[in-house]
Length: 315
Image (cartoon, rainbow, N blue to C red; front, side, top):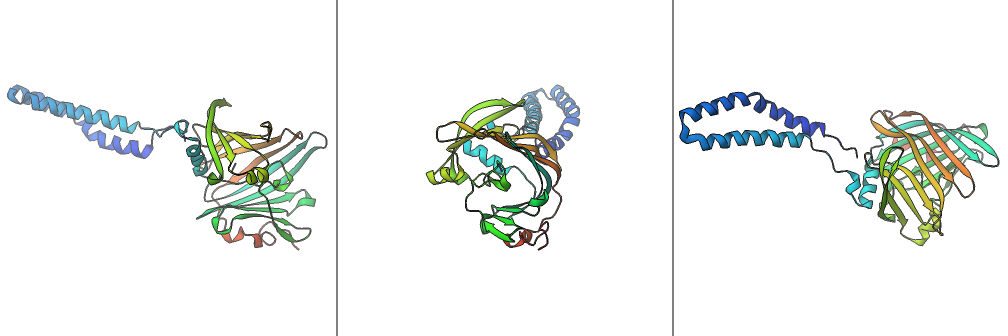
């Protein structure tokens, strides 16, 4: 699933500071001229005072505008907040080296190395995940296209050399606790109802709790939850926690985004976790390396290239 800071807009502020400097540097001279004219021409005192007041007002207005800050997401509606979440920059393209750890209460831990490549097209993102280790899973690929021109999800299995369309968004992604829906960059706003259900502090940051309810029973059944509640940071439009509720309104799954830092100007969660409380199972994904300066050709992120593109094993 598939995290706005309150700060002075540097361009807006600097523009007004630039306009202010000439007025500020000449203020003493202009005041001196005003008072000289007052003594020489007392009948113009009222006009001079208006000039002084106008100069003072201009200074105060310029200072106030230079300190302007954007509206906090805490004052927005649930849907507006999720629009901000979707609008958070993810870069035009990116490549990440990831380490996935799957923890099973009975069977222990399993590790996978994954390469992720993503490109932003005119009408949505396309993201490919490719397993590079362990050997028996090497080459398995998952393509998630949020691009309206070719929306869908596909998997490639090197053992059979087959590309298979994923029939449901609730399908476990790469045999983990994340579903294919969880791996999307954007929240499908037209498929959910949103409302704010509270405020909280999480890891020292103020957050707004936004409830998401699937529109239809069919979608609820496909995704496997009746509703979810996401904690969105008020200083940064990122979901840093989400609880998923079953048909009995019991939390059965929890998502966490942690170790959030800025990489090449893009806010990135270095660690994401999905905990399945129902079966005592969890998946942790760590970003070992992230590069937002790469170029990922969009024609490589297609179902046909899953079996032949970079990272695919030789047939």
